[in-house]
Length: 286
Image 1 (tube, rainbow, N blue to C red):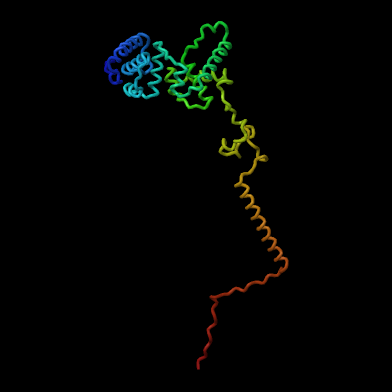
Image 2: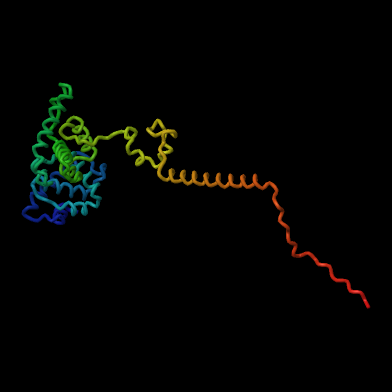
């Protein structure tokens, strides 16, 4: 399918479509010289769609992502992954500005926190590197700005679409998660939250919620031994019923023993024989 026909299906019309189609064709030729797109699972039609979207983004023209995904014949997740791979392969970087992100996601009040945290992360990251590697460090990557924005919104309990943020910065989920871990460790005082991951064995207050059978826990795993185990309400109820039954049973046995002691000779009840034959009367002949 020709790239101009794909542009029409994406809703691009002249005169806006002409520079986009020209730039997309240029990106497509450049991609063909750099790598084989079939290796990353990108066909020719999908490649054309991605090049058109990259060209449109560079010229500040919005393209309906849903239509682009439908034309590519891929799932949304696969399309985003292929889009980011194509961008990185041809050396195109998205421009991510803190103010634009704040306006897009409605989080304008966290702009100073993002700026401060990003600056602090750069200083601490450089301090952790040897002097020979500091000059080659690249802090212009949009993923750094996106991660700082994401952690600041999380710190202030604001909802931000993580998948949309990854899509805007043109990175992968694995790289985004790696930067999140690095930035959270170096700048916990700025981006960290009060909730920290703890070993479940150290949390003894809610152990009954973690284990289905608390009585079967091992002592070395933080469980209670059989001597220290506190019975449940059901077990307490059953034990009370058992004690009451034992008391009643002992009372009945004692009463029987006392009765036997008072009357050792027991009368034997006569047995009725209903089938006993009675002798017939003898009649003498006259």
